[in-house]
Image (cartoon, rainbow, N blue to C red; front, side, top):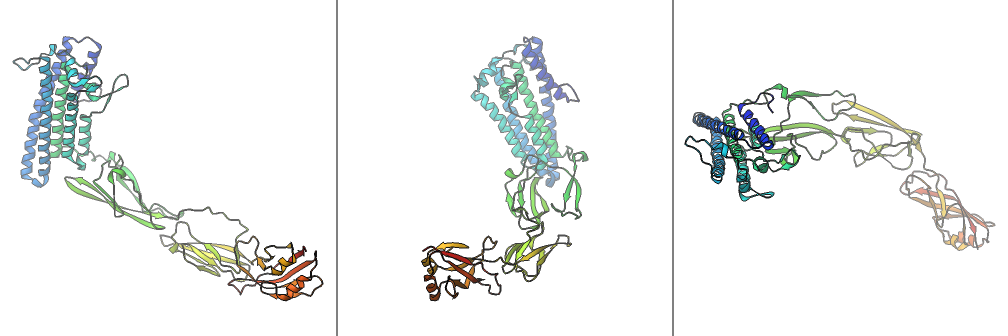
Amino acid sequence: MAGGKLSARQKMINLMYLVFIAMMAMNMSKEVLSAFGLMDAKFAESNTVAEDKNSALLADLERKAEEKPAEFAVPSNKAAQVSLASDKFYKYIQSLKQDLLREGNYKVDEKGKLPFEEMDKTDILDEMWFTGDRNTKKGDEVIAKIEEYKNEIKSILGSDVKYKKAIERFESRFSLEKVENNDGKKIDWLKYNFQGFPAIASFTKLTAMQNDVKVTETNLFNLFLGNTLDEAVSLKKYQAIVLADKSAFFAGEKFQGKVVLGKYANVTPTKLTVQGQEINVGEAVDSTGAARLDFNVGNVGEQKIQGSFTFLEDGKPLEIPIVGNYVVVPRPNSATISADKMNVVYRGVANPMTISFAGVPDNKVSASGVGLSKVSGQGKYVMNAGSGKEVTINVTATLDDGSKASDSKTFRIKDIPAPTGVIAGQTGVVKLPKRNVEIGTVAAKLDDFVFDLPIEVTSFKIKVPGQPTVNVAGTKMNSQAQASIKRARRGDNITIFDIKARIKGNTSYKLKNVSPVIVEVTN
């Protein structure tokens, strides 16, 4: 408590707290009571000196406001408001001191000296300010008056950046936060400082609070005059900050950016605008002064961030531009999984493909290959494979710096597999009544093929044992085929073969031979 270089006022306060502790541990002696009286006299003397000094500072501000109104009119007006608010609160504290003297029936002698050695009662403020675990109306009034003074001073200073440190010190000086006692229990500020103390200790504490009011005036008047040094002058408070030209780079690309000296200003702005939208300052700015951005990034490619911070300084809006950029790359929505031996496209069908280059927008990617064409959709293509066994697709991307990046991939070309013949929905060797064969429909399908191609049958042949082969056009049995089927006996195998089929809408591609269907007659 006594270490380091302390001001005379701080030493006096420290001594007062030491005496408080001593009083709790010993019977109240006349010497201790007198010591409190001496401290009160010192605070009172300091307050008188501060009042004269503050009056001189206030007069200096008024004079400067007349000489340089553009620079000092606003600070002088603020100083006058601070003086009025402080004087009102100072007088209120004085009324509390008078209440204490009156209730204790303490008389001041002709020289203005208090009867220190008689002021050992502890029940005066206890009865006036406290009842059980709660405050009385008077106790609540004391807290309310302190809060009122704090709010008035902060309202006068406003949100001007240059007053931020002064407000922090002011808040600390008149903090009403709960205080932890020796048992680790949180105690209300009023009870911790005034309950159970002798009258002279409480009286001195109130005089010390008056001194805090005078110190507040002195500090603020000096601040308004510009007599305080800017804490940002020392370079030790700065740090090196790296600012990249963009937030994403490709491998092999040169890093571009700059390093600047700066520091984080934990100052809340009055307004924040990003990408043309005003953002809620209370929700976006944290305790360090950093603003969290949250907006849709837009299309793939390099994008810009534009906006502004607006602060209040010297009573005027100060706007600081926000300028930055970033790179949007495609969102990964699937894994890249490939079987090395299965890079295949099929002849006779439109093979859909998705072609992209990581980190490059679609309009800066070009792909080429025999039979390859672009279709609607980002990165969407169709491959119509021609003759040959392989086709190579070449892809070229234009990067942000204008350079090119290329890649290629080779695909095997395969024919569509041979279709399977179908009768009455069944394939291979089947068992059916003669009637089902007579009215049945002959079709063809591709088993386990990657494309769902529409196959239509144009003709087929049917052979019944002991009967000549019948040629049929279309998918239904003609009268000649039906007559031949009627002659079949139970257990005969009717063969449907030489089935001719084609892909609907693509008559140029010739499908492989369709496998036959053998029907065993069941009746």
